[in-house]
Length: 488
Image (cartoon, rainbow, N blue to C red):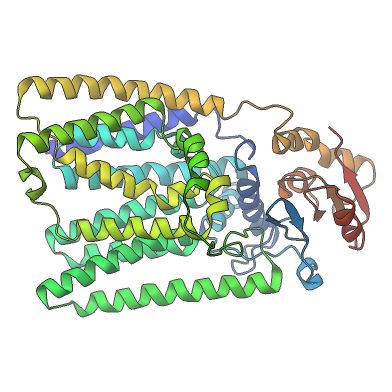
């Protein structure tokens, strides 16, 4: 076995072990705490596939009415046709369908299966991310340091074994970017096929990843104008990818119009009247530690300082070092697409931290890779400093990630989602004992994450997030048999 293969085996084991240690206590955890709404919606769709006998084209949850949170008020949908069934529009739900199929086939707990499904994807995705870093830096220790950095980011570890499709899609995106740059290194067309295939699958389930497709196409346009030649097969793949993504988006919009959707981010997309500026500063300042731990910010500062020193030593020649040709074009367009998303749906970025994983997680990491690649280790003492500092920081990053995992699960009376979980825990048996049939529709009030109580009750019905007179009067017009109100 070659040295490279031994390093790869070590890294794969390292990624799995660190990931498992950080997630070991949460594989059976019901969706609660941060972003419980979206996570429970995804789990509900997964359970819905078992209920509807795996009809892939008809995803459903437990809620008849689909709610849209807009500004500070709750807008109840006016189209009564959308509340006659529990179907919902969702982007290519393959990552809901497969866990449901596995759970049903083997009789395993659906929560554990969903979490392990996401975790396994994360391990393979992180491994390909390591291979990408290794390909770009050509240095094992730098790659080891950066992959440890990537898998211990707080926002990543929290969702690593969650219910959102963002982690499987992030894994596919990492594979796609690796194969894309490997294609430009080795010029093997099958790598381009793998790249576009992975990136297309990622974009179908989480449309924010179309930014990577756009970055690839921009890089390819640059390559075309340099060599004045383009592979026909690549053109066919590019067109096929665009067609699939567009058709998937149109299908989602059509089904949203027919059924409504528990996922309303695209409906809330708008273009603000002015460019984002100071209104983001408070949010970014207060949420930056959601993305990075303190030690990671220090590590980034050291890398930037080291790059600046290397730049001064080499008198600017460092920027002329050989790099994979379309990298700059790819990275610039990738960042621009992320900024466009930030500009178009600012509210979503402020309230749902997982969007960072789908937009800025990889481009920021690629930028850090670029800086790290050009760190000069020629001096023995500088190399010793970076090596010892890096190893120490890896240990601190792991400990910090574990601590932040625990902090994110600290709850209180302000956490309505978690309170809802405990209030409805065991409610299925309670309702059955008191004569409430599983087919009886229920109306519930004050539910921030509406699918949580219905999954725990094992019943379907209607839910509103508030308890205002206007909302209650509208909800009373719906067809239901029982009303449940949580008062603590």
